[in-house]
Every structure is written in C-alpha cells, then in structure tokens.
Length: 343
Image: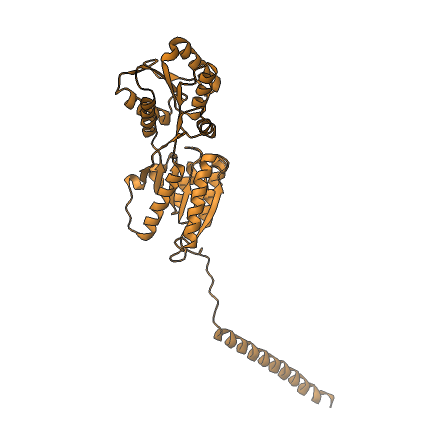
C-alpha cells in the first residue's frame, strides 16, 4: 500500500517543475518581444565632424605683454568678436597667449585641433621651434594663417602668410634719412646680427636708396657689423665716428630699435643731438623717445594691418570655397611698414 503513493507524488513534482519552467520561458519571450519593439539607440565610435556651416576660429598670439603684439591682439579681438556677433563666424577661441614660448604655442595648436577650428591665426615665437605648431594644424586640415614672421615650413604648410618686407623697411628708412639730411655729409650703417636674412634684406633696402645718390657718403664702404647686440658696443662705435667726423656725421642707421635708441642716447650725451639715429622694429623704448622728441623716427611693422589682411583672406574664403591659393599652396601678402614720427 505504501508504494502506491510514491509514483503519483514523483509525477506531481515533475509536473510542477515543468509548469514553472514554462512560465519562466513565457515571461522571457514576452520581454524579448517587448525589447524588439523598442527603437534601438545607435552608438558610434567615430568622432563628430564639424557641423555644416559652422566656422570656428583660433588665434595664437606670440605674447600678450609686448606692446606691438598687444596691438595685434586688440585688433583681432575686436574684429573677431564683431564677426561672431554678426554670425559670420560661429565661435572663436579668444586670444591664446603663446607667452613668447614655442612649447606653449605647440600646446595651444593642439587645443585648436581639439576644438576643431577651421582657421587659426598664429604669430610664431620662433622660426624653427614653433614650426610644429603650424605643421600639426595644417596636417589636421586647419587653414593656418601665419602673421608677422615665417616659420621653417610656412611656405609649404600655411594657407596664408601676412608679413612686412624687411627690404621695403630698409628703403623706407633710407628715404627718410635722405629727406632729413639734405646736402653733403656722412652716415654710419650698423648691423647687429651677422648672417640674419632679415637684417641682410633690411641693409639691401637701405643701400638701394643711398647708393643711388652721391651727397651723403658712408663712413665705411662696408656695413659696420657688431659681434653682439649689447648696447655698449654701438655706443663705442658711435663715439668713435663722432670723434673722427664730428659735424660731418649726419645719421646713424641701425637694423634694430634697441641699438638705434642706444646710438641716439650716445649722440645726445656727446653733445650731438642733431644726428639722426633710426632703426626698425617699433620697440616701446624707441617709440617713447620719438614721442618725447629725443629721436626723429622708427620704422614699425603694421601688426594690425597684418591681422586685417589675414581676416580679409578668411572672409573671402568663407564666401568662396573655390578661392585660389598661391605658390606651394600659400598665399603671401606684404603689409607695408609704418614710419613712426613725432609729427
């Protein structure tokens, strides 16, 4: 009798397990059907591309401390803020301070790449060490606008270069000397850096003007070269010329403002303030001396003009996707030097 009830109980256990399993399978199937009915969220590992029609601009300054670069920065800030307000560009980075340091500029170039800038203006701190900033951005597809001074790869990698010709600056200085030193006399031509392309170009521009006339003669057939850029060396050179030529010495032409300012001070201390000392660069010291009436003039690159030309090129390109490029893919614009006088 006892064995009769063992089989039904076992069967009931098996049936209960089967029923529970069936219910679980049914619920799983319902959940799968419900999930299949919902729209799937798409995922992508690809980085987002620039949205159609959006224009992002970067500006890497050489410095925010130097007055010359402050002028460039101010013009850029005012103009790009206006373009953003007008909707002609979508956004811009603001003035990124390169701190006169190529490593900082290279890091800021990476920031512009990360922010997917379409155009980036850069005022290089050095021709070689800052060059990777230009090439990296160009390789990332950014149209790089180099201002004021070229890097090693500017001609090949940059989209636009806006700078000022040193040779034209030399011609400007040479003509100023002729205009303000009429009649017979002598001039001293001092160069501070041996072998520098910029200084060679400047000297060629000066000579192109002065060699075409006969009244104002050079102190020496050769340009007086300094072995270093220390101010005391040019002071010694000027003092020696004054002792030798006296009132015949009419002008001292220098290829930097630092030595022209030192030369002018030497002339003033020697009792010859009428000697015209002029250099190039537009340094704060030289401009202050001009404003105070202690120096007649200095030739300064037009920093704001360079930025203006670069922005004009960008706007032209935004409005015309087929705008032409120059030799080696880089368009080059020469922005004239400005003659800063006390007038």
